[in-house]
Image (cartoon, rainbow, N blue to C red; front, side, top):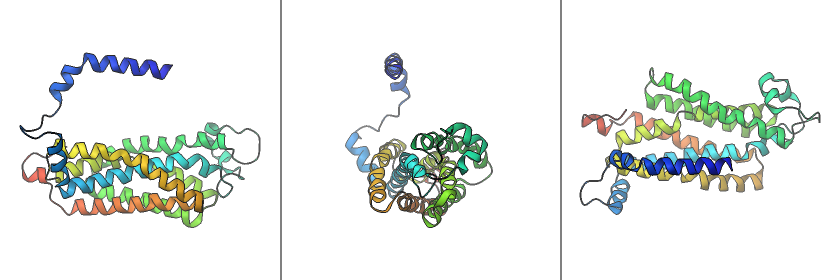
Length: 256
């Protein structure tokens, strides 16, 4: 009921603000309708590359988060261990039920540290972006995220649970940096490029299905190979972006 109430308030707000939103929204050039914007976006190599990057990033992040509780609860990770309860902050959040090992309910509470890491990383990443070039920082974050996934796959065990939770910290800056790098390098208009990028978040619906299928066949540890592959492609995107001169910069309209 609280959610319904908030949605109703949002609808009222949007209705009252409809003219302000319409005036602020970018308007396509004359004769360039919906189909024209799609064609323009698909004609740009960097718009497509950025769309793939957003698709894989959102898919990897959601895939890890959606299976995290089951992963931590599995016997190969924390299911039969009490070590997580020796970590002060984590132990307080999980709240031991007195039964040896980590139950599914306790593991579910620990998932908050995965998403919380993304929030903390966003603040830290914003400060780092003021000192380091965005492509280099993105390359570092994606490389570390990939390495953490590979660690989980290669070693497993109790330590893999802590490592998996740490991936959220490195997911933090990926979406805004990928978005901006793509806008700066795309030969398509900003409205066409951003439209494609926003649509590409559908990866968060498709990739979890693949990760779930891998987990069913090979286990939750093996399923981390899928996000590892995603982060590897994102690393390639970051490296490529660092070698290309931004389109907007050459036109004198750099997007910040």
